[in-house]
Image (cartoon, rainbow, N blue to C red; front, side):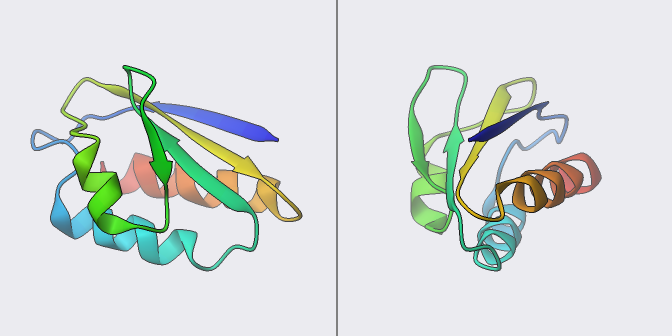
Length: 86
């Protein structure tokens, strides 16, 4: 299992457009992927409405948890996406 943490810098937090892109990227990997918010609530990273329901805002720290065959690649790709877009 691998984890990567990121502090959201986008003024709007995780909103619809980047959430959709994040879910689409997560769908490219075979491993289990979860997103955990600052309060410890988590969801499947492949379900856009669940990602949005976490209510992640600017300044919140999120953790991506990857578990499976391609967890290293998934964690690296998702962390890069977060840096570039959120």
